[in-house]
Length: 327
Image (cartoon, rainbow, N blue to C red):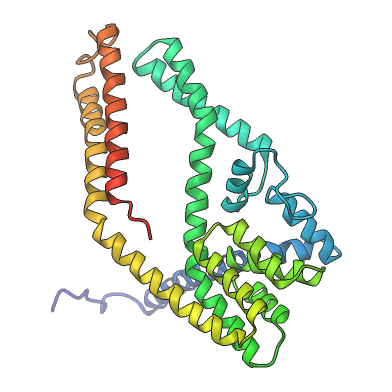
């Protein structure tokens, strides 16, 4: 009845075994979820706390953390190319130049090999290889730095609320900043932790927050640094200023989300118009492999494809300018 199986024909041993097997399967799923949750909880601990566990003193951990971010032992930019150094620091990635060079070279060789296989010609392939090798890391670092900056901006209001509550409880400012470093995950936890360490080792709060703003590259952190500088010069209740700062940051983030929603149509149009030619070319190549095979070696076809890619790139730049609203 109602499509339910008839269990009257089964023995009690079979029923008990089935129930125990189902329970064991449920426990296995629970154990797997517990391991995943525990691993995520361990990943929540920010990198600064992990460095402090690995080294005997806080000063050694601070120096090694700075070096892993592309800074020198004093916290200044270590590379001669300051713009590239800022990009490396703001990306939050461990600074491993040899690994980055190997990955860039591998990406360039893969792109050149794909061009040689589908189009042919070693001179354009060499140019593509060099272009991916030199420009590819810049785009990757910009993408990672942008994601990290957005995540840090989303965590900043909560971090400022923790600072305000700590100040209202009677703690000094340095203790309130270090509380954020202990309680918040990356990227805000590590940034506030480096600020707390710098304050503990002689920096003023204004200079330490300013260095954090330079490392993060986010305008909301710049606003936080301006608030701290204003309080230091003119006095006043820092907690009230930070509360007003938090409200302003939340309102700015709400406005950014509204702008992003308003520009979603343009972004989807750009995505569809960019991907459609490649999808059509892939479908033609899979269904009719010889469609371009007879003419692909013609110089006019190659120059035509190159011109189409350049024109598509220009079109994407124009559409990006149309939907990229500055706030």
